[in-house]
Length: 93
Image (cartoon, rainbow, N blue to C red; front, side, top):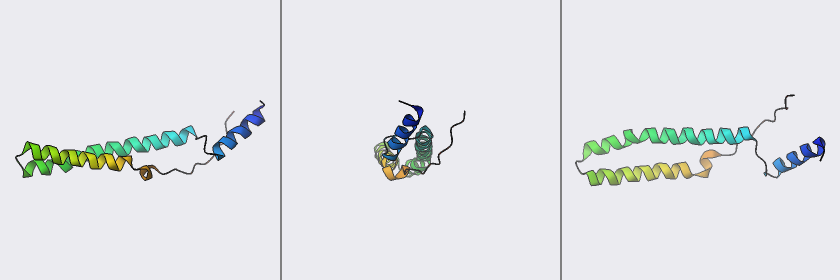
């Protein structure tokens, strides 16, 4: 296959959504990790008031579990990470 045919094949693959730019994948995963980190770091501020309001370890554990499941549900939503438009960059030689 010639270089021109390879380039055409790559463009066709991308048009059919069979090919994604590595930079797009990297950006999406970076967003996922940052979002997960933010959600995890917010847990103490959500759980601390519960611990202050009750002396029941069982109740605190149940409410903590509920908060964690809410965070996991939010992280699992596909709309949280919508497909981004990307700009083609000419290859450097």
